[in-house]
Image (cartoon, rainbow over all chains, first blue to last red; front, side):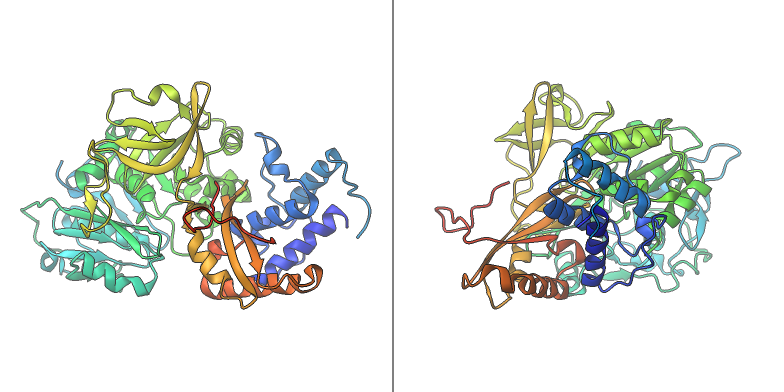
Amino acid sequence: MSVKAAVISEIQQIASDNKRSLPPLTDDLVLLDSGLDSLAIAILVARLEEQLGFDPFSESDDVAYPVTLGDFIRFYDHAAQSHGVDSRQPG
Amino acid sequence: MASIRDSLGNTPAGRQRFLWGATGSVCLGDLPSGTSLGGRAAELAGRSVLVATRDQFAAALALIELDGLAKRLIVCTPDLPPEHLPAVVAKAGVDAIVSDDDLVRSAAFHIPHFTFHIPTEWILLTSGTTGAPKMLVHSFASLTAPIGSMLAQGDDVVWGTFYDIRRYGGLQIFFRAVMGRGSFVLSGPGESIGDYLVRLGAHGATHVSGTPSHWRRALMSPEARALSPRYVRLSGEIADQAILNALRAFYPHASVGHAFASTEAGVGFEVNDGLEGFPASMVGAPGDVEITVVDGSLRLRSARIAARYVDGDSAALADEDGFVDTGDMVERRGDRYYFLGRRSGMINVGGLKVYPEEVEAAINRHPAVRMSMVRSKRSPITGSLVAADVVLKTESDPGEARPDFTREILQICHERLAPHKIPATIRFVPALEIAAAGKLARHA
């Protein structure tokens, strides 16, 4: 599964757990406008860490907190490359 | 200074000071000659008054008006579960309640000027192990002791806080704002962080406080650019280096400081060097607050600590030397101390407390669960999260049933627990370690 697909799938699962509906998950969607609050985003980061084996937020003291879904996926893609995880392969 | 009302005259010449709520505002200088209590303030004199409002703006007006008038002010947190209210009322001897039906709209009544001041006891609520709140007795003196140096602030200071003023961290900002020379912007009930950031920007907020989790969320909001603070304050959770660096980079003109405070011990200290943790030189140094570290836990002694628990039968607040054990574990590395977390195992999710036992109790309701242990998992977003290790009754086929069990356990948790208490991750393990005393072996 690509990093992007993993992110999208976890977001959908968390929204479903919380019985929330999601807007279209486009790159320019502001994460906090997606229906996920910061607790949900924290859970997203924790579950992605379980699935992908890394948490890019905790790897540096200098992180720019992502605002949009596109920022978030790029942040994970970038970390995936440095972890040797192939992020390009589709689903 | 005996009460909040005495400080409302601190209006610099040619300026007005305001208290801005989400739905209304007042000029602070007008408050001594008006009332928000519908002409009934005099009936509350000498009483033990529970301030239980939906909107913290209404609470702010009532607290200003009743300090020095009521015998006791019991400050009800906005999320107090209703089932605990009777116990709060009984323990604190509440004999009057201020609620916000029409409280704000009737702000124009004129009542006779009060000619007496009594030292009001402030009762603050903080969540306890069983979910029932712990009730701490503070005084005007203990609550305002930390803010002496902050009153020398400029005339143009506008405070804001992501906290609710009915929690200790927010109440500190309330006192700094109301007793200083500036104005204050309050968030509204249910107001989004983005909308609040826009209002903070519109009112020119200069001094803004919140937990590290509040600030991470603010930085993930496009509206964070609406704000241009001179002072950014973090408290209520461990401030890690990442959030301190991110705030310094995002608000280059602001000084960024973090504070240690608790409802029990009051404001311990403020750290303004931009680094996480605190300098080891602060430990054992003389000052308004004395700091010691005993068995790895931070202990504080000062005039800022609460007087006692409201029902004297709670565990003693301070040791015989007057030190409060904060239960926050610290570790010295080089010339600095760093925070490790809570000794009690209490998990701090974005400034909200979770006791592992209450989550385990929910998980253990699932018929297939033999036992569970809830632990803290570090989160770069909320500081900590709840993680659960679960032992099933029958070690059946591992692969098959478990996804369903995860969903079912989460479903039970959703029905019984507040969102921040629901496990972020559930791991199925073959066994859990039991310590000699027959209790789960909990590790930090």
